[in-house]
Amino acid sequence: MAKRVILQVDGGGILGITPAIVLHRLETDLRAKHGNNHFLLRDMLTLCCGTSTGAIMAGFVAAGVDAANIDKFYSIDGVDLFNNSKNPIYTRFLKPKFQRQPFINKLNAILQSFSASQNANVTLGQLPNTLRLMTTAYNLSSHRTHFIKSYDPNDQAIRLADAVAWSALSAAYYFGKINVPNYTWTRLDNSTPPNSYPEAGASFQDGGQGTQNCTLDFVLAEILAQGWEHDDVVIISLGTGSKTKFTPYSQSKDISDIGQAIKFIANQARDESTTVQEMAARYICKKLPNIQLFRLDYESPEDYDLDDTDHVDVYKKGAQQIIASSEYGNLVGLL
Image (cartoon, rainbow, N blue to C red; front, top):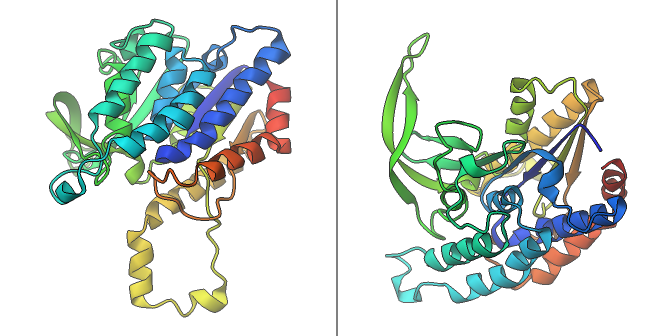
């Protein structure tokens, strides 16, 4: 077993079916390998982090929910929630597309029934101190992403379910922002060095709508901040399907100004951020061979919407492609 194992899961809404199935298979394979039918993924993890749908998975893993129930939450419950929790279409310009409460109710039910504490109100500070959990949420007040950490004393009174909801159930258009009047944070001004000012109140929206849909950069920073750069570290990074982003020069040279604007609006920064973060991680792993990255993703045939339940078979097939890959086999062999 590697000295430190880190799990990072991308955002992607119902496309999270793919990493959920992979986690289920990974837990099953490791139970068989080590002869322990009670093994949970969190038992081997030092750090667990995710954004949006990845925050749900990371939160469940940290709380001790077995991966079979995480898989079920996505493959069955998630599909049902997205199909049956829509606000009436005539309210679409007045309300978000989905009702948030049914999703929160199911999230609480999973924590109540299947987490190690069987407590829907478990706080970040009540999670095992051997495992660090981090979720992200963009704050419309601070104009930046906040990293909510189970090991930050300022965050430990936050309910796990709330931290997950701020990251995963607050997307513009889909759910709408979540206002948290008593959340405190620090504002820095532009002086040199910057002055800091305490602030209260946050309007959180989905952490995956900005540049932190993938949080490999946070993982790399945390390895350095915690002094793990000389330890044996395995990073498991799970994607939710990516369509190949390549345009031949023969075509790109003729892209119009309007075409450029469309690409900018259509998540260009988020897509580039994921690519650059993976490249940075691979560069560091090349320089520090004691750190190994297993980026497990598949090539999606299309860019599916985050609530697209018509292509569940594609997401499941993507998971099987990952599981059949040599990269996955090497990971299981190492763990």
